Image (cartoon, rainbow, N blue to C red; front, side, top):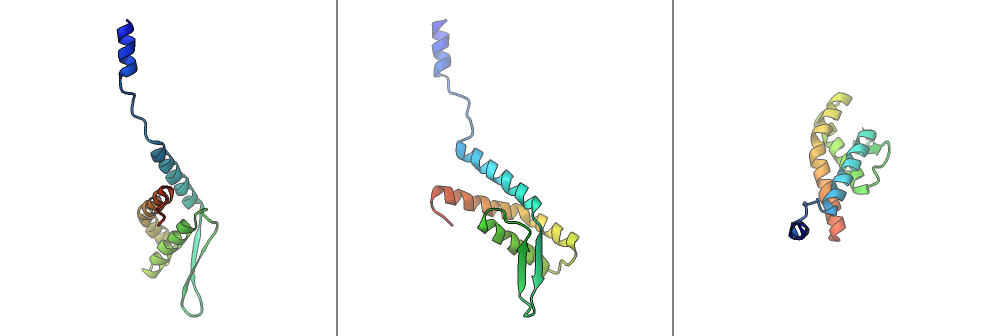
Length: 113
């Protein structure tokens, strides 16, 4: 009986995800939630330059900029209805979120991007 208890103590523990992976998943979940709550307006000024305004910040300057770039790209491609722009941005979101994830990982590692 004692031997069985000692063997149980020596058995490898169930692998748990590293804290960094958990934090990364949490961050991505929060980012995705924020993205759903923000509206983006892309306009052109008198000189023809595109301007982007967000209804709110995501809390990450890098993400705000990437969201504006993605939306502006869609408008430049000729997407002119709200439905078409939204579909274009939705299509770009996986890449956008992956780039932000990489940015956050680099920030945590202290390497910056």
